[in-house]
Image (cartoon, rainbow, N blue to C red; front, side, top):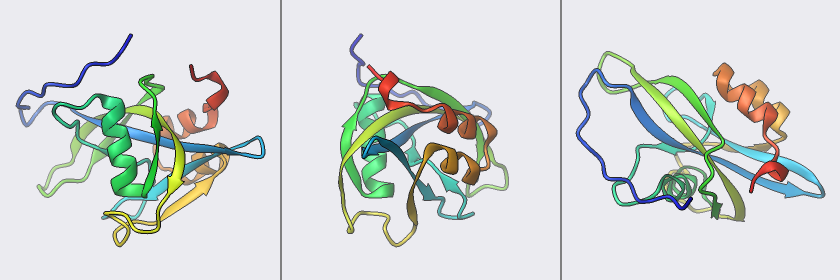
Amino acid sequence: MKQLPLTLRAAHKSDIRTQICALCYRVEQGKTRVLLVTSRQTRRWILPKGWPIDGLTPAQTAATEAWEEAGVRGKAMDQRIGLISYLKDSDSPNELPCIGLVYPVKVKKIASIFPERKERQRKWLSPKKAAARVNAPDLAALLRSFDPARLR
């Protein structure tokens, strides 16, 4: 089923927020590598992610976040491969509860100049090593089980 662009509604401050995450990957000599970036404030290793973009599908939003935060371009697939939950640091004293919808992005190009290059580090790792670097247990489980051969 083809995804439709999102139409956003205003959120109440107590709502759980939804973000779109990009699991950027490439296959080199038969070995899968995934791309992690650091968060801006805490410098933890995470997936590129952001708020849904009005008028774009979740996969298109994942591709946008992959470019802005990690400097990669590729094919974002409409197939959501998982959900992760986390608390997002915000400018207010409270953290925001979030659910991240994870979409795979098969990387075709890597740029040295991209919007958030001065704010983040990026690192290619095996899914197993990436899982060991992230703090969120559900993200670690998703990374450990990631197999691009199972994508349709």
